[in-house]
Amino acid sequence: MEEAKYIPALRFRALTAIYDPLVRLTTRETEFKKRLLEEARPGPGEQVLDLACGTGTLAIAAKRACPEAEVVGLDGDPEILSRARDKAAGGGVEVGFDEGLSTELPYGEGSFDLVLSTLFFHHLTLGAKQRSAREIARVLKPGGRLCMADWGRPQDPLMAFAFLAIRLLDGFEQTRENAAGALPSIFADAGLTGVREVGRLRTMLGSMALYRAEAR
Image 1 (cartoon, one colour):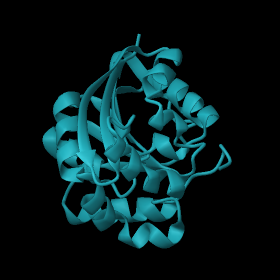
Image 2 (cartoon, rainbow, N blue to C red):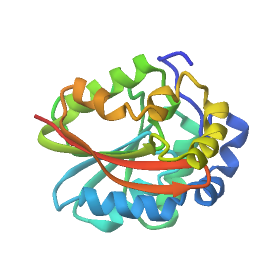
Image 3 (cartoon, rainbow, N blue to C red):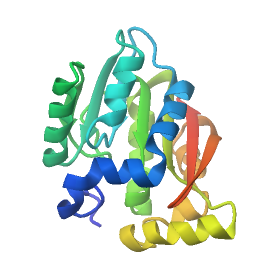
Image 4 (cartoon, rainbow, N blue to C red):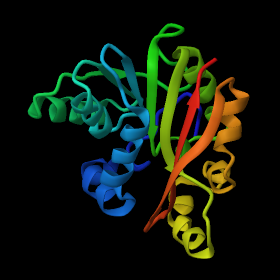
């Protein structure tokens, strides 16, 4: 994967049409996103970014959880953003959607109180992970928080075996840090503080880990 290019949903454009039902079926999406929002607790007046928002499921849920927050989703795939906008409009939810890359976020320093991200970092090479983490630290306000969920280090052989499907699809290089449980160290090296795992779920594709960190 080139660091300057987006990755279509599920990595291949042909799979975009089945993105929502497949994610719901394989990742326990409703449960892990519910837990993530309970951890994040978006508040009235807060500026919230859903990084690599996909079809907008989490951004819409965040807006519904706190209608007084200003929520924007960002993704590099115009096709998936069109689906996100249609979904938000159909649900009567006011969420902004921008096109852009995680390695060069189109926002100023200290723009957000909260950055959310789900099932994104495992698509990226190590260099792109590091650049994206630094961009998150840059756009967060002092004391702002990152709450994210992605594949974590498998806690047993069964979860390691299940995770092979993701590793084969997205690449062993891209998923190496996830499999090693190294995402927290990447966020810490980017300047975020208090980086920790705050939850974990077993899924049919491996261990889903929830992380939290704060900006200095």
